[in-house]
Length: 178
Image (tube, rainbow, N blue to C red; front, side):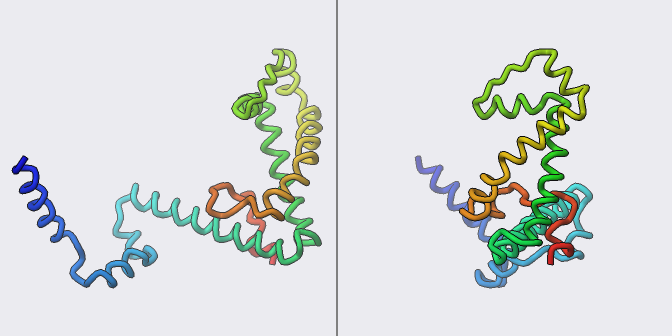
């Protein structure tokens, strides 16, 4: 149809007016530039919150990458690695205990093809018995840690681009690991 081509030409002409006037190279430079504090102040509340969240995510990924590089320099052994593992284990046990207490752990393992189908009494035991949760979480972490070290760290299966944080929110990898 003839009208379709004419409409596209008009739309293209309007779109040209939306391009920066500083030339293509300057536009690329500006689009790649970080958001300044002045830019954030000019945003509405929702935009600023989103920008802060995205910046925190970028900062976390960069810190995670620096941490893994630092641990790799030591061959994923030694005092720094031991401190990292201690914090990782503490965090992992805490998370697993919470998932066991709520029963959420069974949803997660079912999503991975392990339908454990716990009995109602087992769920009650997990919810009521802190020592049981501690023991199960500790055994789980102890079994998973060597595989995590090999696959995620040594074999470089973990990357900052993947989205999962390598460290917990306690700040390990920041000033305490240097």
